[in-house]
Length: 236
Image 1 (tube, rainbow, N blue to C red):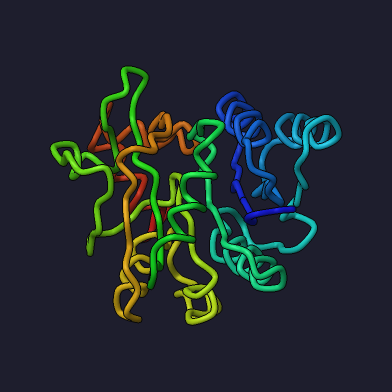
Image 2: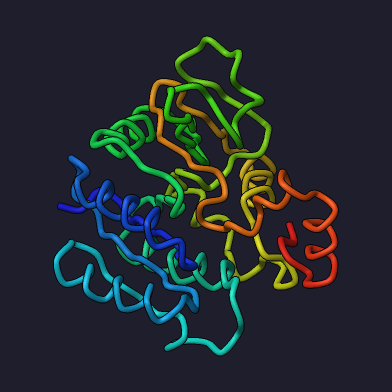
């Protein structure tokens, strides 16, 4: 029996995407897994279509649903919320630059079942040497196994509970923005839920593998901010 709805939004970055997919389909928990292809190249689309035949996931090509150019994160979240509520299951978002462990989902789901008033549960992100990395560097010195936090959770690998999904309709999200992890995190707190980060549930994160252009932020900051302003990228 499925324990959660899991989604991965995809925009090219095929190598890391396939690593993400293989890890999720090897989870020790049965989940209903959807990969949302957000106007990727033909090569990526073709590889995902082949992967959907051999691995246990459903591929949704957003070009069949909308003509709005990428990124279409709001649409993905709305579709996923609808699916999760229809099946009365928590929603787990895993980005395409994250590799989970076989027991990642089971730990997150168990935590959700044992704690009350939970809104969101984030798995801590680490690098290849198992050190806490972006976007959770703010928690790198914490020694607790579990952290309750009022700070923003990333969508790298995050569970949204059914109770929270029932309280906040993603149709209310600002259509002028590109990313929604901050506003959804803050909304959970506003509605009286508690957000947690599981420090004992690490997932491998390769920052910006899902959006390689953001590496310019470190390689050429002036060019990065110029392109961000001119092309109106990354509106949070």
